[in-house]
Length: 239
Image (cartoon, rainbow, N blue to C red):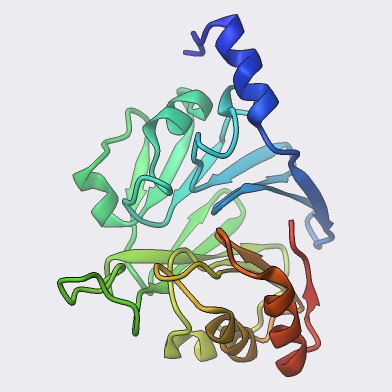
């Protein structure tokens, strides 16, 4: 239900950043890639909308298209936000999420829990869950911000193209075994995810044709671009 007041809707709309749109040609039709902000994005393919980690702090989700599929990488509030989820969920929306998400949110629509290194299929799209965790950056109590085995990254296979949305992770060894990646969304935001140097190493490991640094906070993006160019010929898209 979208019951937000008209005044509040206008205010949120004015605060909503412009949504960059890119296009990826595949054997099953074009994929429109819309980066919303922070770690939030959505894809459009064959009339279906796939939202990933929607967060109401970066956009007014009442103005965005409803989701046919939602992917949630983990339970942190900037990735699992019930305000955004309620705004884009319809009765037939399907959700795929890491099991840890269920401790904080139980969908009212059909859902599936998948852990690291599992595959599932939604219509003609295969989705692979991959590891996402910290290897260096820790909380004051010594625990990683993102423990191994808790959150997911996702590889979304549409036609012959593979889109990797890494979630909150560092440059983990598993990145070298992902296989062909056409587009990679990789986080760079200390202390929670990667430093610019780590991101460049992640690009070296993943070898994407196109890389989107995302979840970047106050990161120096010029430094990010410089470091990536030292190790890769990937096209760099900053949105």
